[in-house]
Amino acid sequence: MNVMVLNPNSPETHWQDMYLLLLSQLNFDQPIALLLLPGSDHRGHWNEQQWRALSLYGLDQCHHLGTQPPITSQALTWQRAKDLLHPNGAPMLHLCHWQAGVDHTDWFNLAAEQDHLLMYGNIPSDCFDRWREQWPNPNCHIVFDGTHPHIAHSIKTTEAAALCLKHPHIMNWQ
Amino acid sequence: MTFYFNPRSMKIALRIQPTHDWIHSVAVAHQWAHHWQAQGHEVVAVLFFGEAAQVINHNESCQQWRQWQQGALLVCSTVVEDRQIQALDDHPFQVAGLGLWESLTEQADQQVVIS
Image (cartoon, each protein chain N blue to C red):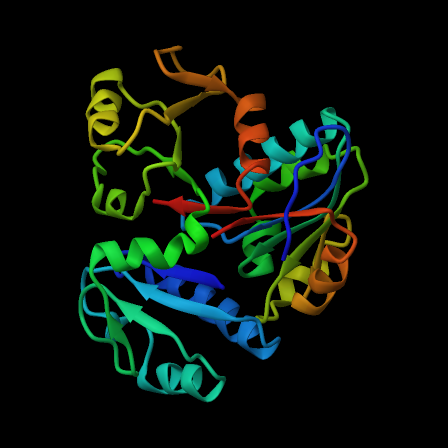
């Protein structure tokens, strides 16, 4: 089952895009679950009518780590949420485009022992070292695209492209 | 759905749900598709989900795809109609819904889904 992860701290435009995608997938009877990360109040992004429409379209799995949304939803621990993202223990690839001033690593709690992290952007080496310490395994890489200084643990874009073919489901984090 | 890895030649369908950092999401998708093709794979479809106008009007993103030489079909799916789409007939994106995507992915050996 496809799991759509939504971060309450993402901009409203992103939530509206994801809302349309969610409705489309439900319309095509694709099995999908919604996982809401902790953060600000979910109600500010989708109105009551939108939430109701999700139920009408057949969304039968909604999970939350923080605030209860205005539809039937199951409260999860980080561990349960991680299990939800890794059915059958299949490893995942996580992508993150590092941005100065943004240091959210809550979602590291959703990374399993065998997962990989590919980081993009001009991340300072000391910052990357800090992220590597928090990542649950050594599979933490910077993708070297030639536009920033080559630092340790970097891999080429060709290696990154090959790696993602081995991971059918990839999470894109902000 | 069964996924398998054939290092020699595969037909790949890439679906990406861009983050609000649209430039980066598009650049990564383009970079991967380029590498896969360089390795002898075929990219049968790329689906971005979002407002099509967001893709088309983004000069930097669009410029990358305009250089696309391999003939892979690019699909930008949207439910939101935008009149600006009609004015840009030469852009490489085809605006479609998930129905076309579903039929294209039937041709693919492997789907790569970026959520």
